[in-house]
Picture 1 (cartoon, rainbow, N blue to C red):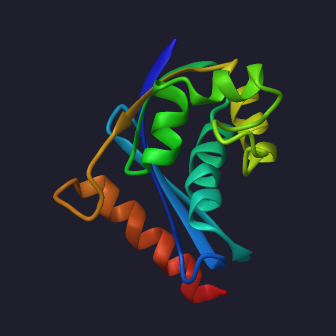
Picture 2: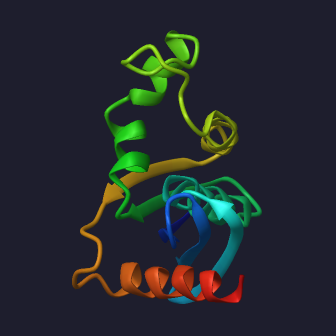
Amino acid sequence: MKKLDIYTDGACSGNPGPGGYGAVLIYNGIEKKISGGDKNTTNNRMELMAVIEALKTLKENCEVNLYTDSAYVCNAITQKWIENWQLNNWKNSQKKPVLNKDLWLELLELLSYHKVTFIKVKGHADNKYNNICDEIARNEISKL
């Protein structure tokens, strides 16, 4: 199984507002950058889109270390929020519908193919690839 690193970030100007996402995939020292955006979205949706679109580029099952500065994305997986949401019929701990269910379902589908370890990194700090992803995401907003 191929092993690679993926760094992701999402950004939004206003929340909701125009948003962008960026990801850097690194395999055997080769870097691939992907990006996209939406005219009317939220920061959390862009964080999720970065992860989803990065995983969608993989052509076969892979073992991935996925680095994100999004506590929302990371905690949903590592603290098993997503499992609780499913058990509670997609309701959160406040008994309200889980936001971005469409994207969470898409992510779950992708996670069924790949072995992904989610790693939380500090945003806007000294992580080179997180900073690159942030710049890519902000550049996407400027295109909208």
